[in-house]
Image 1 (tube, rainbow, N blue to C red):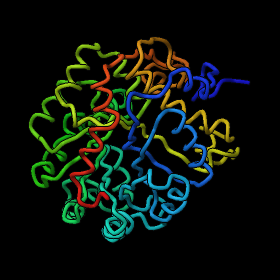
Image 2: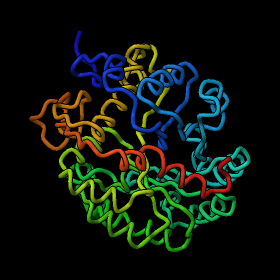
Image 3: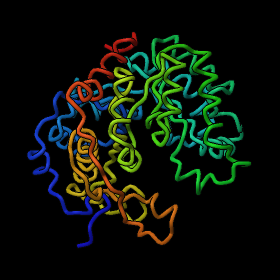
Length: 358
């Protein structure tokens, strides 16, 4: 059988978790996308194996009951629009304004605003090129509403450097990577509540830039989600430099994985892109567990070798590289104080600042 993209080396992720042992402190994963009751049940086993104690998830409003039924009081929810609506202009406009109030009523501590470069194309298709801009009129109104209800603001701004070399290579169309941050800084100035910028602020490739952002905005926090991206870029970082960064901003860097669960992962369906990632309960477990194996190895272990997770970005920037190739994963073996801050304390301190958190 050909190896799966989540398990190139045929690892037994349950045994690997036992060999790794528990983390130095229970982990809060502040960035997930949980949906599908059966898939979440499989995710829960992977989370239990790897010491994940609490999760904060972007779950559709109508799926919260299914997720809570499995995760109980270990789960908190992030306000998101209805991405599957047949009327996306309404779902991201007035519909999201209403949905923010509904999420606030159930205690959601964060409200997510996706503002990646690709959002511009999506907004144009909905008939309003500025609909998804963080500093556009509709988003500004929604951000201010969420803040007034006691929520922090979560956002996705930058995409990987590999995408700016390829997908976004036309700077006249997409702007430079640095220009993506103008809207973020405008809103950090305008709405001084806690902010969480996903995926190491969208720029794990340049810790100096992140230093500058964090220095200028003391209400800005980052998460470490997007496992393939973090493994590829942070493995290249010198351990002393990364340690210095994490120590300087201790309390403001939160652990995240960006795991997506769906019941579509549990059966083969050639029409579903989700089924291409996993198509059985065993493959779904490997998909979810692989992210925790890779992230805990990156942060905790003195280990170096090819990642067990295929990284299509390597093929994207060099067509001669096999699409199933993976980058080198080099662990940084952080000390327990840094791990405690990254794994638990930072998220706890952020969430307790938000009056929606219970």
